[in-house]
Length: 70
Image (cartoon, rainbow, N blue to C red; front, side, top):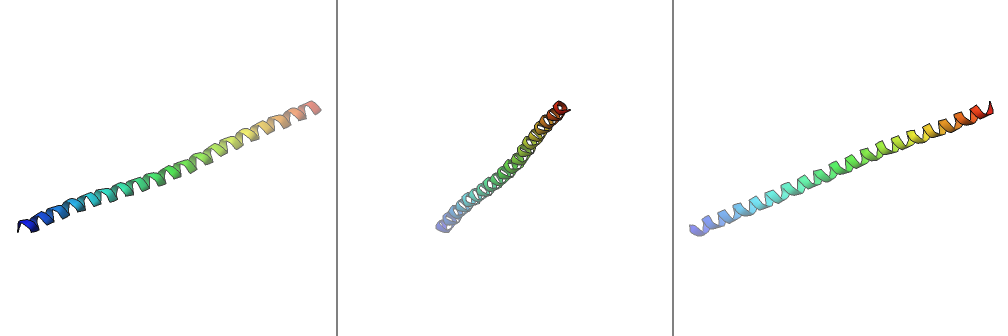
């Protein structure tokens, strides 16, 4: 009887450790996915802002050239 009880207690501790490890792995996987999503979003925002700045600069250059012509 004591051996069975000892074995069941040991199994419960092992199951608890395995469950915690699995939960940590799942949490880290979700955190990695969220970080990748945020990085993708930030890259798009950066590229849009960069493109807008370039467009504005080109517009100013063209306007300046047109003003000089005429």
